[in-house]
Each structure stands twice: as C-alpha cells, then as structure tokens.
Image 1 (cartoon, rainbow, N blue to C red):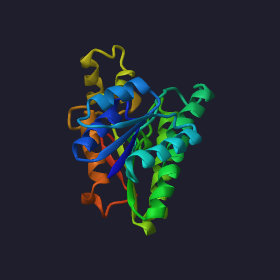
Image 2 (tube, rainbow, N blue to C red):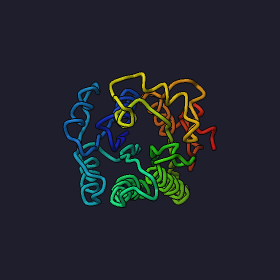
Image 3 (cartoon, helix red, strand yellow):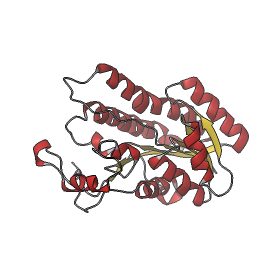
Image 4 (cartoon, rainbow, N blue to C red):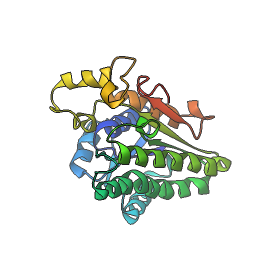
Length: 253
C-alpha cells in the first residue's frame, strides 16, 4: 500500500507520516520545505520517498503524484495535512491574507484530491483523509479567514466523498482542536514557554472561547491516530464524516 502524506514536514503531518509508516505502509512524503521533509524521513524506519511540492501549484502536485506512482506503485491512501494559519478580524485584516489562506487551505486541498482522486476513481479503490480544524465548526474571534477556509475544505471533502462513494472510495475529515505544534505555539507570547498552554485549556470568556473539557491540548500523535484509523479497513463503512479531536473544546457545536 502506498500512502501519500501531504504536509509531512512538521507537526501533525510529521506525526501522521511516522504513524502510517509504523503501521506497515509505504509512505510518500510531500511538503514545500525540503529540509523538514528530510528530517521526517530520517525518523521513519526504512525508506520514505520525499517530494518537494507547493500545493498551490497544480502542475507540481500532478508531477509529484505521477512520480510516486512510478517509483512506489499505485496510491491507495491520501492524508492531506498541509495548511497555514493567519489571524485577524474580518473587517480589518489584509485581504491578501485571506487569498493566501484560501490558496493553501482550499485550492491546495483541491489540487491534491483531484490529482489523487482521479487515479483512485480509475481503480475504484482508495481512502482519503483531509485534516481540517474544529474552527470550521464554531466561530472564533480573529479566525474569520482560517475558519472559513477550513469550513470550505471540509465541505469540499464531504462532497468529494459523496461523488466517490459509488467507486468504493471513502473521504473523511479529521478536525483537530488546539494541538501542540509550531502553528499552535505561534499564537503564544512565548512559543517556548509551556505555561501558555494553560490559558488555551482554561478558555477565555471575554472572547467567547471555550476551554478544553479534558484539560489538555492534543499531541500531534493524538491526531495521527485518528487519521490512521480512518484510512484503515477498520473504518471501511465511514465516509463524509468530520471527526473532531479537540478534547470537547467545541462542545461539538
């Protein structure tokens, strides 16, 4: 089985790549950061193929997927994790940030699932997981662009799952909440200080943000476990679903 992991250079993507490799899959790692890709590959026992790709560029994506199929065989599973985060109010944020976020978080997803999904459709077999965010399901201050882009990629994936169901192909979303990654820490006043996790857990009434009922932020491995499950045959009757991995933070709003 050849599994493509997009956004495998850091954070959740790296954890997903390691987890899927440990489960016995042949993994092909895609990211725009070649140095980070090499570091991820070094953590995987055995051989991992790496491809430096900007998901905003459809031709780059298509070339990489063609190379994967040539070098490793048919792609049977896809985990799309690549995404970016910028914050700012709806009324005052720079419109260029919205375009950048949608270029990566929506059109980047579209480029990848079109490239992989068409091949899966021909073979009438495969499974896709797109890592979104619980921000797609609940309004949050300063997250207008990010939440909107994740809501768009969530619906994109659900419609994709509907269109591919007749071919026996599943498509699901994993929606993490606050997870201990560089992206999460970039929101903290001091990214190296673990004490800044506590306000995330506690929540903030002034900004209408719930805390995390389970009392901890997620690890990247928590999210990887969910991705591995949904790509496996154990989830063979699950499709078009959004699985929230957020410790109850959204109260599943």
